[in-house]
Length: 68
Image (cartoon, rainbow, N blue to C red):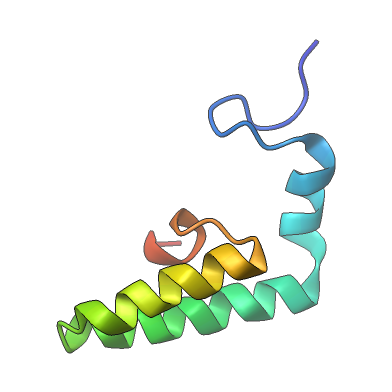
């Protein structure tokens, strides 16, 4: 039996932490909000900076760039 996200390679503990850590969720929400603003303003530099910030924080871009 395999546990975790089969398509994304995330292990069960990472998946659990990603869905239950309020601090991490606040970071994702912040990235999402700023990404949406950068999208509206067609600001490629701001989006690039957000991707770099996400990597530093250990957050996958898909977590804040895709619709909920």
